[in-house]
Length: 439
Image 1: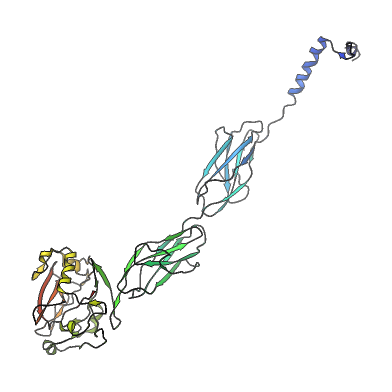
Image 2 (image 1 turned 135 degrees about the vertical axis):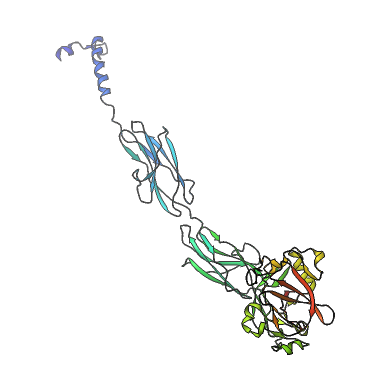
């Protein structure tokens, strides 16, 4: 050390100067010292960005690596879950592409659910996680089934709904809505059935008689109003006695889909009930009876009336009338009958009778298709010349309002063995059924 100090020189300013050969020995020591001071690598440093593109079952989450910690990042991605601090031990994505900014679209999430997510990155030292973010998926649309219409009267009907899915959120309202136009919604007539059950029934009130309605169930949650399948029904009409009748719209006409069964005129005066054969063949005025004088036929077949009953008082309910021969022709033309055949005496048409006959009740495989909805049943008739009952199960007759001379009137007839429609006139004393037509 002493010999080294002797070799130190001073310049004119008194500053020590190391000889050149001594400097060459000194610098290598400095280089060795710098190499020994390099830091060891650490885990990466990164951030998690806020969630974007949130839907009811998906989201996009991205991350950014601010530092690789001195060792290349080999894997990066997003991990998520419904608990705090999600890790790669749970749900996660992985990305090996060398990028500072990375993202992942996460799918198959549950609606209306709070999730937590973190970006992660891995290098040779270990795994690092970014800050935790949270997001809530959107509320899904609920689902509801409309219940079949039931208990139809002339001014009320029942329906309802069954909720099959709440959309991941609580139900805030449910009920049914209806209108005389398709696709009714809650801006039309509706019911409110609370929030506490999944299956419910509702009654529609203040309906108009013999009117077509459209109805749908609805359900509402915090984000959606959803409607079930649409059903169509027609209210019934009632007579003066309160008997209810199904109705059907055929073309531009609205018909009763059942035979009239009132025992009173619409002014509430009674119609004579003639049971004896002799009395019936000698009558010259209003009369009614049940087939074979058996009232058990009333619900299905209705009453048999003499033609005089049509003219002696208001037989059909108010707003309805017994159809004319021409109006029956309008029905037949709508069902496809050639207009040139309408006024022919006898069997006319092709399959119009089949369209008008019910699908059950007719003998000898004579059932119809009832595609018209007219629902004709083989109720037989009461023979004017004898007052006796005939042909139950085989044929049926309906009076028209139109006379053919002084002692006869026009009628329509369907047979089990025929596909077409018979037109003729007969004695006004005959006992035949009545279908009313809306004015």
